[in-house]
Image: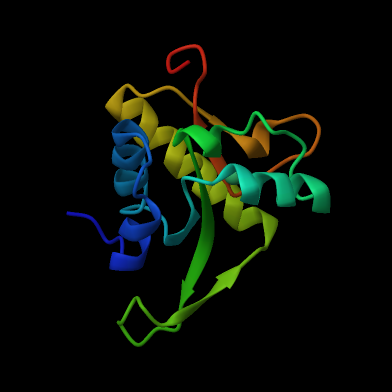
Length: 132
Ligand SMILES: [Zn+2]
């Protein structure tokens, strides 16, 4: 059973099914929301222009990537209510949960938080070697 919300599922539309499976599984271990999945070329061009992204070869353009944000529930039991947190250690938690879920499902993924330059903690993508 997934704890993803309808808005998360909406943002996963057009994302590769194997990545969706990893996200659904990881969400059972760590609270997060999906902030972005499939991205248009226009939006990617704007992100590159603003410096938020460095490539027009983004995996978001092909449905092979997702961005996740840690979701701090306000504690009332309704997961819809809460706030996004950007504290880096929380992204280590998401990274660990996503890697564990990917391993369980046999789906190779890459975490942007492992990139040596331009670390991108919220970003996960299917490994190009297995998903060109
Ligand atoms: Zn991303």
